[in-house]
Image 1: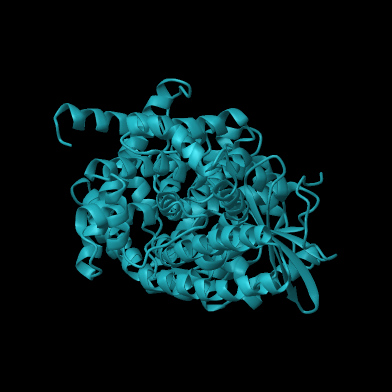
Image 2: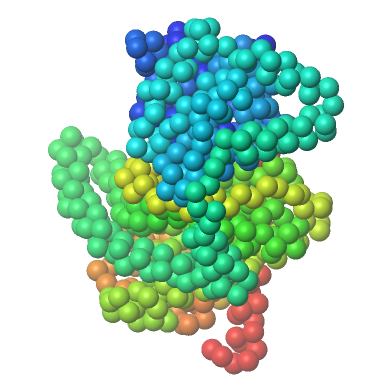
Length: 632
């Protein structure tokens, strides 16, 4: 049968599937073999990501298709369905099955399942260098004899064994090497009863592993166990998570200040030349204003505010991922999500949301249950994204910490910010539980949560992946929606009806409702117009207070605070603005992503309304209580 996936990089070469368990270095093997000659896409009708790349060996082209990491081919999830469909399709001529040399027995189950589906298999025992460091030795020739297919040991990070891997692949594709017929017959005889087949494959995996794996150090994973005693224990696991959160925020805040200022100054200087160029073309004033004061100013504000913290946060996040810590986060939070009727994997999608909620929504693909995936999507916005950090940090610093720029104030701001984030996490648990008992009723599903070995992250690879796969991807999405937003904002601020600009009229109309929330019309209007990108909320707010026709920025937080106080801001206004920053509609990029993931207008609207209603109610309650107890 043919696969429903349309190949892009085939180039009349041999099509090869690349399969394996999660966390075995499969993507490292893929990247090492294909370099930058890659293409990514989604499986038709599913949200499972697929990567393709071309590798050349001895003048022959091979199109490698990197399948999602799976523990089996039992079709219990979209990833398993996709992997099985492609492996058995006529498109795939052979399969490279990547294993982790440090935990071979667990990986052999998938190897044997794949061998039941196709005889053209090459087993890649990766991370052989890590196994040797831990005193684990694998008899590769004996393993090859027992499996009846080519087996190659590799250390993909160091580019070791990759030529041998391609040589083995070439011999299988050419038909020179075939699966041992006795092994093929033995595996075929197990297929009749699925339950018996599963048990037989597990037993056979154990037997093979026992024969080929020897341990020179029986306490080889002592370091991992010692770390897990600290990082996953009830008494220490959660406090360490909170401490790491504070440190990441502090490092991001402290590190992003200088680059953000540099970019803002650079764009301001460049803007003078852009303005002169537009004028030199003879453009009318309205067109110059729309392009420069509108589109250019909004775009450059988004880039200068968004790029530096993302360029810091995403690499840190990826380093923790490479190190093996993020699965421990999911482990620590699993019981909380289970009590809320959700999936423990939601912890990982929540972490992705810190960088960008759109990325967090995309990350829900790892959740197998459609019901639990929807819970994760609807609640992801309760984790403040990179775009909301500048609002939170500015207000926390001005009204609760002090505006002097130092490592100490940055640390205090990070603690306050972490407290806001923890409030968002607690809200995620509560709303997840509410959804699971109402419109998304159901029993929490079980899932395999692997705690991979701790590994030294590859800093170079981390920087490249985080910059290109995450930072620039998210930034481009923000730019796409920010450009038309800049035009709309300029039009509203420059076109007058009845002696008032459209912006002033709309601001005045929504002011009474905003006052009930402890805000004002200008603040609420800034959030509404900032829907394309949260980064422009503060500049729009300043523009509204100063009655300007273009975005304005202050040289210092002290000047900004003076403007806010002059327009009636109190500590209560600051608190409510923080709450509404945490609880309000997702940005347009995230909403578009939600629709792409759910293919549902209904769930996109629910994802919009749930945090928005939460924000309105929270602000009204806070304001009511403050006035009741005469705190303002």
